[in-house]
Length: 155
Image (cartoon, rainbow, N blue to C red):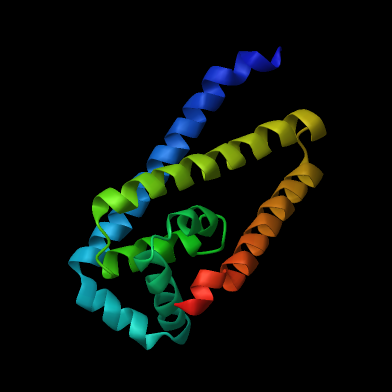
């Protein structure tokens, strides 16, 4: 079939993935905001979470929206950003637009990778492994960039 024959399904898949992602972010954000002391206690017990909270809290206080988009691709970045934004009492109206943008970028990337990977490489175990490797590579690069982000080091 012609590639444009799949556009409605791809759009619906992108819409569902992005919507579910924003709702998940918002749920974590609101839970962290309402249970701030409990989350803060949980964060202080983990050295890694404490370090991430310290670095990301400063970045979020300075705006940090573009970092939310980048964090979407890092392992656990999405969850950490949502919780830190809630614990640091970011305003919902500042959080939701960046979360939505990050969700659309991430969903577009994921749906595109699946669609074009399937069209170009076919569907078999080898291409599935290649797709997983691509996802892990992008996540690793995002994690590396998050660690090296200049404003995160200053926070």
